[in-house]
Image (cartoon, rainbow, N blue to C red; front, side):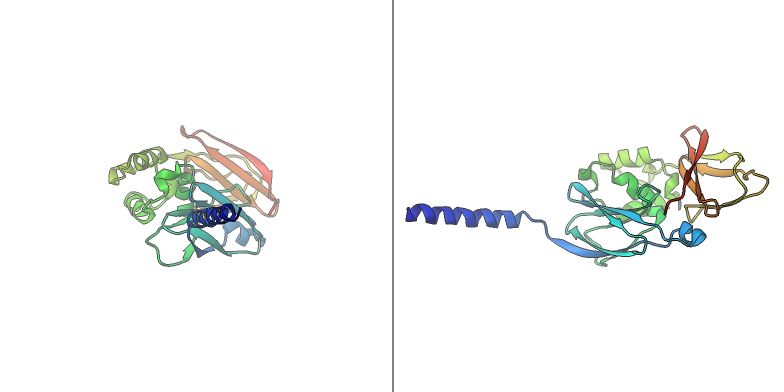
Length: 243
């Protein structure tokens, strides 16, 4: 019996050692979410859903309306993609930490958010060791607005390991004609976009790439959602503003 007990004890110790060795080391980083244009327009803070890659999974947490600096533990030795979605599903602020980054502080941006949101949908084997800094540099040679890149070409070449300057193609930007909405100031969710100042219930024409664009009228408590498809066709609808 004694030999059996000793044997089982050794097995338990070995299993414990193996289990501990399989736990990935982590480091703590500080993520900062900038002020959203709607917070300035409405005087109300927004809540967020924060998502980040952890190994082959995506972890998420709720960020209250009064939190803007969050500390999270991320794996060492891999590129970590981070995105903060206003009100849970709007266009995110984003950023990335690579194994080469020694600074534990990450300031998110809407420009990076447009790219990071797409990368989070890619097979993790492609982005696990991604040189995000290099990717940004390649894109910035062609455009300063990451919403305007041809996502298909970039993601295809990333998956094939063929990222180059030629991988970056600029998507079409469409002329969106004026349309009827209630009078007032409709503030864009994007810092880089102009707001609608509407008189006589008609907007001015705008130029936008394919995507979803939201505008807030805080006095009405309404959000205008404007959708531009790949052919430049548009449609819109209203929803309540629930910060």
